[in-house]
Image (cartoon, rainbow, N blue to C red; front, side, top):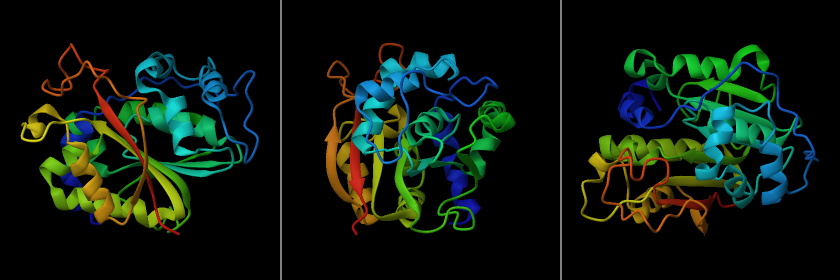
Length: 266
């Protein structure tokens, strides 16, 4: 995909909350260890993510963003290779970094449009997230997927993109299709992909609300080659009727979201 295609992602990046960061040492979970190949439980990974060397803003967001539940649902294990696609501030990047452990690897990917957004508002948070090698198992990828010069095709075990597809789709459907194909290209055969987004109602002005009907997102994913495998209700909120913009104070940070695990066929 050409860099020019990613100019359509400026608005998408605008609505992704950049997590607060601080230059600290690589987290070493107290009381929870990452043993290669051993699956996490929700409880053990939540304990690992609670480590105080993880940014406080990240830990404050966990109650609503449910990273432990999402990582275990995705099947993240220590030693895996993971991708955080359109990572922006890197909240999910750091959660993945802990989940895959020191023997694993995380690619934290952002298109160039993210760095150009609103005078470079995300440059500082991204730089702080990666400063001083504080996440030594994370490789920063500044550019478009599939980024084959950095991420070998068919080399990633698990991937995630959080709350990104809706804006890409409503600005440029072709860019949304290419984005998902880029993720598909870097995943191993049999690799898993977690797609989360704000639920939208059919017929609503979802572009303005920053939402997307689940079936629309899944149709895009299936067109890219993915198989729909399972859905988690970790981010579900029945109190959100999908009629308010995601920035509305009554739903901000606690919108009803779908979380679907997709699979690249072997």
